[in-house]
Length: 198
Image 1: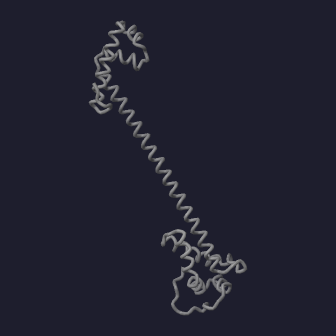
Image 2 (image 1 turned 90 degrees about the vertical axis):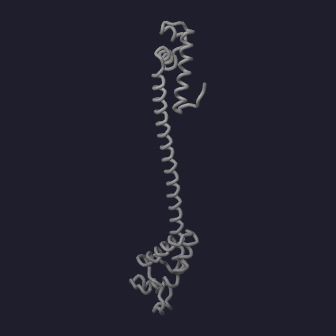
């Protein structure tokens, strides 16, 4: 984008059409005059929409770059050069704002998805650790208590079916299961898997 000129321009008295025609002939002085006249207003529109100085400068820069490379897009019958540049800056700033909002939404959604994945992984790891702790605790039980609990709880048998399978009285099996569960509760509470109890 051209810098602001301090001295008088040979295009200072030129109208919009004359100025744009000169820009179309790659006249940098004509572009500098267009910027001198309209640069502040173009920047101001972009700044009000974007509320960011750097982004507003980029939009203003884009407006004059577009005028430099596509001067034929300006139609004097449809309005002034200032209106043409302001309209472009307004549209470009709105597009940029929408793009930033979409990007922000995508980042928020990605963040939520990553958080959900981390939560799932942590839950799965915890479940695996819990299973390992329970298996280890069951394995430490006396054989008669361990077999009764495995049949009743892991094998899905009733107390009566467990007693029949072990060839022992149902009351004895129930007593061994209760004793084994108390040991399990104590062992698992000691390693922090469950809260302590009696």
